[in-house]
Amino acid sequence: MALRVLGVTQNMRSFIRGVDMVKRYKSAATLQKTLLNIPATQVTKLDNGLRVASEDSGASTATVGLWIDAGSRSENEKNNGVAHFLEHMAFKGTAKRSQTDLELEVENLGAHLNAYTSREQTVFYAKCLSKDVPKAVEILADIIQNSKLGEAEIARERSVILREMQEVESNLQEVVFDHLHATAYQGTPLGQTILGPTKNIQSIGKSDLTDYISTHYKASRIVLAAAGGVKHDDLVKLACGSLGGLEASVLPAEVTPCRFTGSEVRVRDDSLPLAHVAIAVEGCGWTDQDNIPLMVANTLVGAWDRSQGGGANNASNLARASAEDNLCHSFQSFNTCYKDTGLWGIYFVCDPLQCEDMLFNVQTEWMRLCTMVTEAEVERAKNLLKTNMLLQLDGTTPICEDIGRQILCYNRRIPLHELEQRIDAVSVGNVRDVAMKYIYDRCPAVAAVGPVENLPDYNRIRSSMYWLRV
Image (tube, rainbow, N blue to C red):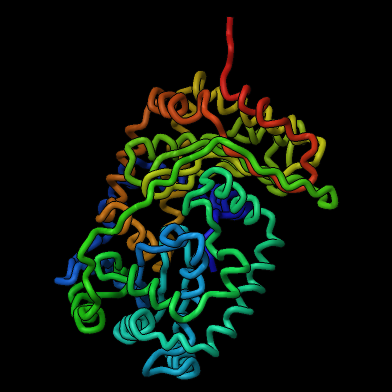
């Protein structure tokens, strides 16, 4: 259930839908008015430090969830995988609800209960009718405070997680990004996988789970977020009743610095039909002022899939080259942020013989970002970024997720009109500056899986991260 990088297909779908959204909001005044009329996000901090944040849209449904500032980054080599294991155990019964009782209660409400673990966060959330929000909050509070963690259930989930690991290993995009983190952040918590190694899953017991809960599930590290038909004052009262007893953390959560290392990992497997390659430089954290310009640069590179067509009519230079010269099957630029660092790069899938040509075009485009990006390209990327920003907030669940994540990352939710102004303020000079700062003459991290014999060696890749001109 780990949170992963969005697939290429989903990005392309957002792009196509984005064209319609741009037409719909062709008037800047209309867009501005729409952004200003979006309901405000209200935030309240309880006495124990737990934050309650909500956006009331008056809808007939709501999504409510607990965002916890703890993920695989909060683990060490010995207990790596415990956060994800704990996420699985949350639905196996509590002190007052058996697993069957919990499942029946959720089913009878017509609600959906789910969870996921990322490298920095663990999330439990429920989507339900607005009138059932009190019951959903009570169930979520019960799950994180009173899970039974029975030995029989732990043994059963152990085999479930091992099967999940096998499924992940068959998803080469997931495999590549795990390798990318492992080589980029080697020797640090961010280099660990979310699911953990097999030996850890086979040895994790009740004491490991309870230790993790007692250490990281503190009120000051938890946000109760809600979106849809939910009244903020009522939500605060529910939080006081169900979560007011959570222990407050005496010390602030420490962030272990995770150094970036320019390096590579290659898993050559000539039995696979296509090469899967990711290359990234170190980006910035959520709160860094360079984040928005890097997002614009990321959008400028874009995403493309052969099945979507486009050819010479693609706005992205790399997409046009990929289509016209048959360089790859798909590519996706990404900007993955963490608290104090990030990965900015590209993932592509290509035929074995095209590895070198595709990488050459990627690095040429990166160098062009640093030196020759144009005003028109930046304006287009800014418009597309704003469009995608709106598209990603389609429904109570993504809005709730946006609230929870932003409260943890920024301690507030950035209003959409403010985010729009920040994007509008990005100039060509800003894009060139951040590209020079983060990309030009930097050591990249490279992860490649499949028939990658034709991928240039690391020294050649590194030497293409700058231009020598007479």
